[in-house]
Length: 199
Image 1: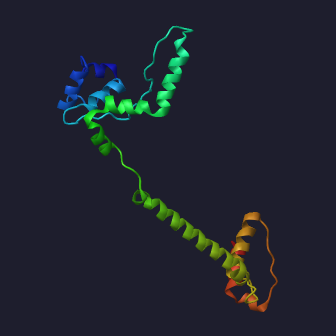
Image 2 (image 1 turned 90 degrees about the vertical axis):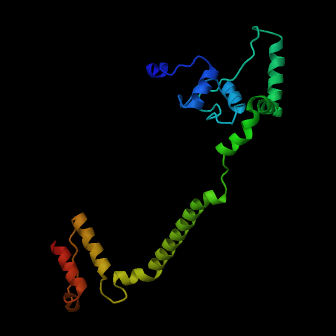
């Protein structure tokens, strides 16, 4: 990667920005504060910084004092007060953003509203409707239809009940004996049961 980047080495920030505008460079990695300042004051607002310092490690700036200095606590409290009151953002907006600040925000940010999230609500409504249909079908089957499937409505084993018992006996290796009756020998259920037993 270093060998590739050496071909595009720039002598300074101004040269790099000119190369960006002319198309010789696609991107330029540099200090975020400097790039934000330059992009905010660019003629024509053609430059934009991506990530606002969140893509790479954000270290920020510090104030160097001697170890055990009397000023350390006072400076810490002053900086925390400035950050807590929002003055740091105001200073950054005043000195680092420049004339291109509003245009950059319009291009880079878009708020999510109900229209953007409508698909999620439609999917949620469809899932709720499907679960309600499944719930009603299960209760209908349990309270009304299960007796007919087991054969209690007609007095003979139902076809689904017969198939279910046949599959269960095949899986578990259990032979299920049924009482022979003249009516059962000629019914489709009995024929299906006989077919499953012989398989």
